[in-house]
Image (tube, rainbow, N blue to C red; front, side):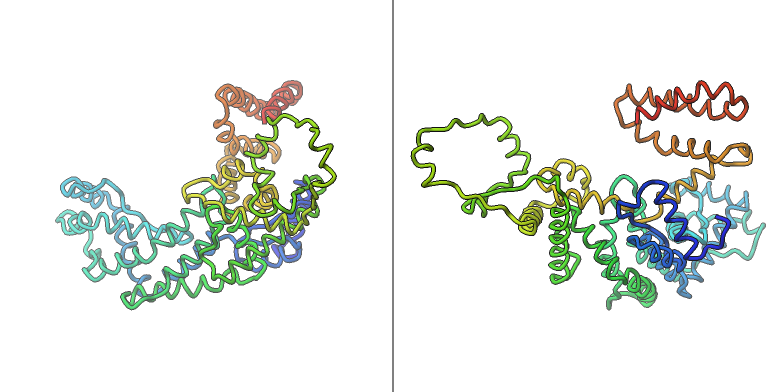
Length: 465
């Protein structure tokens, strides 16, 4: 993008991207960081805006690392770790002491400014290797090479332990949000509520821990302040069978969320002309099994058609069953109630697999789950794509065109998906992918040769998808 990164220009880029991928009629959601120009851009497009939760966690943790006592502590540890990385004598002394003290043979870690968890890992690794580090710094050969590197005091060690303990919930939350195999949008609201609770200072906390928690709590409390964004995140959590009880919300907020979920399901029912019409008798309104459940569908499929009996001819008009068409709101209310009454899913299970097996039982909510749970809660997957593109596009591959770079990136990101398919299909796809890569490079040198061969294997590749 050569233009200035203003909100208006970014909005135009987002519109073009949605038109290119034909997403304009599918209510797309845009996940961005907390930059003001991105906020303006999404507002101009009118799309649903979700702030990257990993970026929110990074900003809050960075505020905690800027607490004066923490900043001084990380500076001292950073100086020690940098010294061991530069000095071969100190590194060799560290290895000897690790063997003598039966410690893991791990190198010290130096933090990176843009990754807050690297500071956590630096402190945690120092605490793990602290006996070996102290012994190495006191050894004669290391003291000869330098005299201005000193180990930490007992107070510093105690402070480092407190910092690691206080920041551990933030690290766990960051690792959870970096997952790509399960939905992350539904985890934001429960995680945020838990972090707000964990970072509330208590009487037992030391002054240092209290400062860290206050810095994190102050930053997290002002995030996700938009009511529309809150509703979207809460609805996403309600559609996740792991968090559908909404125990992280106040009772009134949970009731409002369930009411909003019923309204959305009813609106979906009214708009969906292909949905089958449910008809039940007045006596079967309460306590009757859902006619759309897999069990009842299977029973109906194997039940033979009943023949017209003489009793029906004689008493049919007198005891005729009256049918009543349920409204969309009644259907939605019944489906949401059955969904909430069902046992919750374990936190270790995959909600997507659960919805795949229960889509017939809850058809309206299943469609809403498809719309919400597909939204990523972070921009981490997109940033990983850029990292992969950086590995592909290098000075040694300066002749690659943008089209070929897109093809290589697509193959790289989809190989793992096809590896989970049947072994025959996986091997065949791998074979076609390798050939496609081969002809991508051939095309740069001999367009005549690849013009005839490359489409053949590309067509085979697309067919396997």
